[in-house]
Length: 127
Image (cartoon, rainbow, N blue to C red; front, side):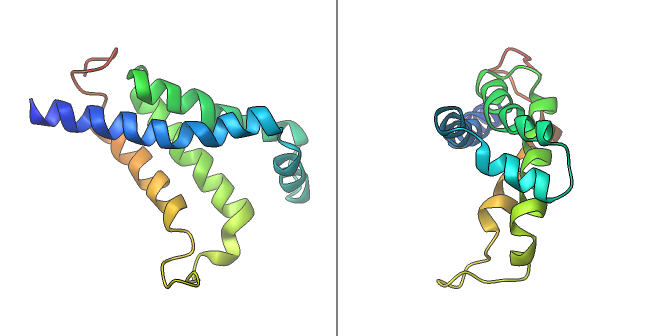
């Protein structure tokens, strides 16, 4: 039972923390993301993938549906964002002494952990 509760808490907390990032982009637009994608030499429409990684995947995690795919999508989304936006920070410390990309790494790793563990009993997937 405690394993099922842990999986539930992990899914809901990670999805719940990521979702506002996506909702902010729905409200404020993705012009900034488009400019980064184009600057990297990628087609502009790739910027819309942010909604899959920051809205769809978190919602799937929260409800526990297609959880493995949602975890992988979340990790992939943040990995791409880290490469495009924060690649110069990979070996950098922030002013307070923490790793400059620790939040990005948190989401990459927890997305993978969720994908590997599965949704748990308290989910639509029930696995």
